[in-house]
Picture 1 (spheres, helix red, strand yellow):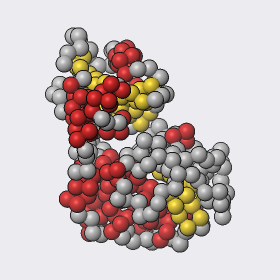
Picture 2 (cartoon, one colour):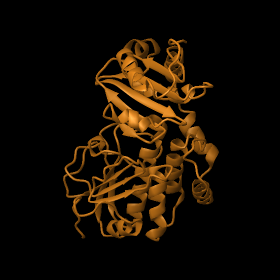
Picture 3 (cartoon, helix red, strand yellow):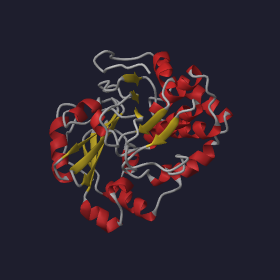
Picture 4 (cartoon, helix red, strand yellow):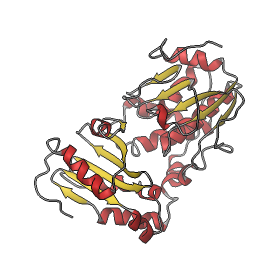
Length: 325
C-alpha cells in the first residue's frame, strides 16, 4: 500500500484518491461530532463504496446516530475505533479535532468545507460541492462501482439536508444531475423526506417554539437563545433545538441569523446568512464552516454569548435599534 505523509502532499486529485482506496483492505469510517445528514450520509455512502471494493469496512462514531438518520447505517455503528490496524477514512469533518472517534492518524480526509486544513495522508476537499456526500458520489464512477439503491439513499440524504431540500445557494446544476442519477437508482424523494422530516417529537416542537419566542432582532441580525431552563420546560435536549435555525431564516429583512443553545461546554452557536461570511465570524470564536453556514462553541452562557456575538457583528451588519421580539 502506498504511504504518504501530510507534509508530502497538500491535496490529491480524485483519481489519485480512488487509486488509494482501491488498495485498502480494512477500513474504519467516521465523521464529525454533532453529526448531521451530510455527515452520516457521506459516511454510509463511503461504507457501501469500500464494501463494493471488497474491503472490510465499519463505521465508528462515539455519539449515537441522530434518530432521523438511524435508518441509514446498514449495521451497528461502533463507538470506538477497532484495534486491528484499520485505515481511518473521515468524511465531512473540517478539523481533525472534530473527528467523532478517538484516533491517532487519518488516512483519508474527504470534505467540502473550504477552511479544511488538509490533515489526512490523502485529502479530497471540494469546496464547490454542495455536500460531502456529493464528493463521495464522484468516486463511484472512478472506481467502476455502480451506485445501488442503499448507497443512493445515503448520498441523497446527505445532499438533501446540506442544501436545505435543494433551496440553498449551494444547489447547482451538477447537483440536480446527480439527484437524477440517484432517482434512477431507486431513491423515492417522498420516502426520504418522510424519514428525515416526519420523525419529530412534541418535545422538539416545544423547544423550537421556545427558541422562536426567545428570538430578538437587532437591525439586520436575528439571534435566538436556548438555555437549560428552556430544555427543562420543553422536556427536550440541545439536539432537539437544532431545527430552530431554519425557522429563523424566514424573517424578512434579516441578513444574519444565529441560534445560541446551551451545552455542557457553554454555548453552541449556529450562524446562517445569504450575504455575510459567517465562517469568518465563527473562526474568531475557534469555529468554522462554510461562508454562509458556520458554527462555533464558546464557554459563555447563551445570554453572554449573545452579547459577545453582537460585539463581533457591530460594523458587519446594521444593528440599528435595540433588540426587539
